[in-house]
Length: 376
Image (cartoon, rainbow, N blue to C red; front, side, top):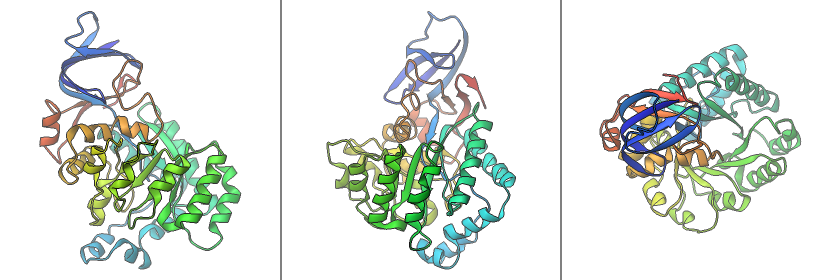
């Protein structure tokens, strides 16, 4: 049993000043004061919060696409870059050529760096294989990463229908989707690549096989994806740069809106209207979207962007990278410091939450605890 005494604690729901947390592999107790009823190893620190939950990544791939930066600086948009032979297609080719061992090595290194930045739970998508054979190959690599890193991070696998390379491809995915059932927690579709009708067909089939549903939508245009996601019962709906804020006014059950400010930063695109969506009471999640076009391994950087560029309030940002990130993965024991929750804890370098946000582009994690054990 261990105890942390801190100047300020963010539980995932509220701030508690002069607080304590007692834990083993799960949280035993917390509250205001020093927890003097508990005699155990004690650490006194500044600002403490739950481990970061990165609910949207494409962390498994080979190669890099650094040459695209100059194209972006010349004013080329994402679809122009794609047509020039770069973008997703370049990563698909690089990934196909590379060995399993090398993809595993590169991907593990990226995830290890994310751990150093405070991430304790990470969703990882397939999507750079395209053919079912290659997608299953990537899913196998994700499964290996999950086993190899299980003491340091929880990896949640998602199967992603990423691009539609030819007519009839949707039918092929539907025909072979049974091969993925039970191996991935979620099925995700990039709606702007597949269109409304094929996206609905894919998600309905995935739902019938027991997948949780996710949806990439409204990154480049308003596709009507939020309404579709609500109708089909998606767990989260992601990107949302062009989504009307009114989409989140409904009091009905709705998917978690997952926003990806590092994507806007790296692609020179507008930011999703996170502050307005959060003001409506929607449980906004924040994630890195780690991929070759948005090579972001730091949830701390995402927090800075959400606060300074999306004008989200600190409480909403911190919820977005913890509690709401867990909601976007249907995880009830993550993203919060509460009795019975997994003891995933970030001891930050800050004195309090205001200090956490006042210093941007800095190291935000002093120590990281995963399932009650110090991992950094």
